[in-house]
Length: 445
View 1 (cartoon, rainbow, N blue to C red):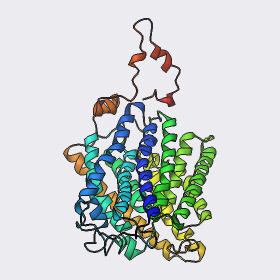
View 2 (view 1 turned 120 degrees about the vertical axis):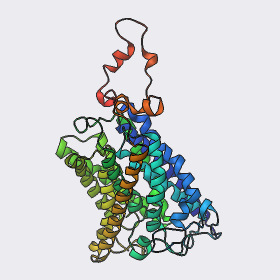
View 3 (view 1 turned 90 degrees about the vertical axis):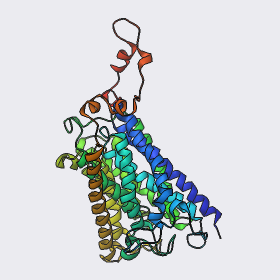
């Protein structure tokens, strides 16, 4: 029998996760230069248009259909969202309709390729990006979602190898979403190459208020991401809600402390980035650790991710908006630290980590799962990107990059100052206004 409360919670959670993609667009959009912000917003927004179509046609079936063998990929029995089981899914008493589950998981499929876009802004052809989203979702995300999220007996009789054979713990997508997107972002940044002038001119954020707004929307939506993954209004949802709050708060502090000692001042950009790092890290562990474990994972993630931002300069890859430092590193931290901080004291479905008498067994399992997703995503993403680059091209021309990708790709500009110009004299209202605006407000773009 369906549980109305749990069904409502899962549908509300799906809506919260949907909001995360526009939130991500603002988070990323504020960090690019003003001449590129529309393209950044559109790269995210188009994931909302492309992925649902794929999910309906075959994506849900490949991710949650009956395993074809080896725990690698589902079949096509749910193509077109047809042939779905009529009985509800879940555990007593939290039964929900399978379509509610399908829509909730769709939102994960949407935001994962959107996360990748932060690695390659200001230089990517729009329609090439659209083709990449189609190919990457099909060849990378849907199979990995099957590995991680398709538990035996949920929507199909047999599911994926990480969830069932390996026995790794991933409550809400540290592997399938964040490690997956972070590894893909690294591969894509390497294939597309550096922006013109980087690292001499790394590009300053054009709107820090956009960044903080986006981070806040992400934090708000993340309660659906993590607590909604309990698939019911239950104890696990409450645990995940609590650890998500604590880890995110601790990560902000961890990031800002690193900035204070390293740079001499805590920054708004650092606070926003720290919050996202904490959200990423707690995602796989949300209902598998206690509140103190959530605090520990958060502060570790905030500090370590802040330190890892400099890796792109050391190794020479232009991961423009730090997808690797935040999502790949944060996802690895959260996934692996379950092997240390996991505890069955609040959730019997968890496992006791090393600090709770569980030994090294679960820690090793978590490492295997993380590395498997990382390697698969990096290698296959690089192949997809090279194929697009060799056929229709993946990068705009140097001229278009210099003049602004918004104009070349969309024939639009984000800020229209034409109405401010005077009809004559020794300048204009615009000249006077922009001369008083600091570079961080967008004029460097």
